[in-house]
Image (cartoon, rainbow, N blue to C red):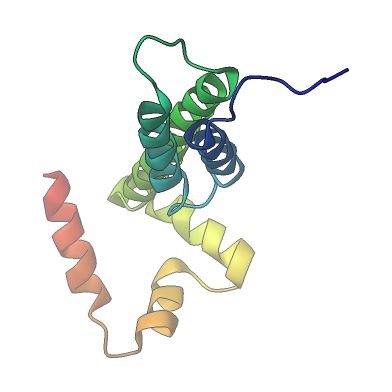
Length: 133
């Protein structure tokens, strides 16, 4: 008795599912979820054949790719929002206390350790404060 299936395996559907799962696994990284999810969606489109329904792997690839891209966008937007909120002048004391607890120095000293002593921190913060006015 022959137990083989007559259905053919769609490589694009499998690839979209794998890329979608990878975009979900790597959503905490900034660089991978959006390109992987976009490629997964592209492979779903390429796997669609005229007159035929999408396979389960293609649907799974589409869902996981979209979820991975949305999670990646959420991480990026949340990180940018947090960074800009913490750099506001009214949050400066909280930022300094967080850096002292973590690194043992305040934010300005930490910034100068990274960018060097000749970096104009006050000028940088003045430009940032003018951005919010």
